Length: 214
Image (cartoon, rainbow, N blue to C red; front, side, top):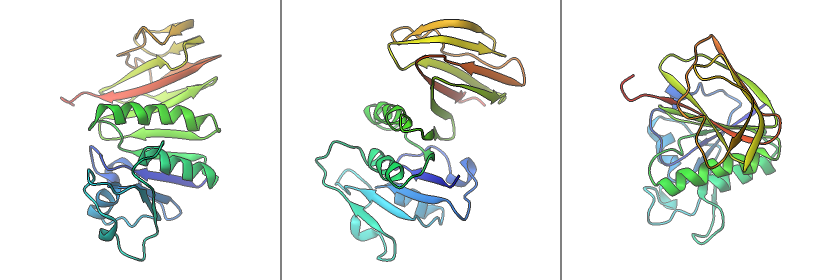
């Protein structure tokens, strides 16, 4: 499955430390994400954004041989949302967002909401940076390999998530109902080689975090 990598304008960490760029990757830069890519010598397949005055990149800073899709500042989608919309429309179902955490907190929340909106189309979407990983889990299950020093948190994105099971973690759950107004699943950690997470009905936000001291 060909992968689409979306590089955002706010990224904690280096691209090449987070992912091995492959020849057939389709690389999208969300507005100022172009500068992040350029600083590491990565040439994007396409740059999408509104190039407003709050960004550290202007349309004229991008070479003519790199395709650019310009959108108005007043729009319903964020620049990252525009990239996700493009990726889905072009048929990509394996999407990795680099960055998206930190910076303006409202943008972080918007990016997390985007994960679920576009995952409804059957896409596998993950958002990562140096210290964070986030992905949606909808009516499904997953095995997560243990990562030393990383916490695992599970939040209900829907009002209620039914049949939530967590095994191989310090705080296990079995066939539980998680509500979206109480963070019961925050701050867990692996005690086995793998952590198993399942939700029978509902949508979970699974987040992994690395402590600053690590």
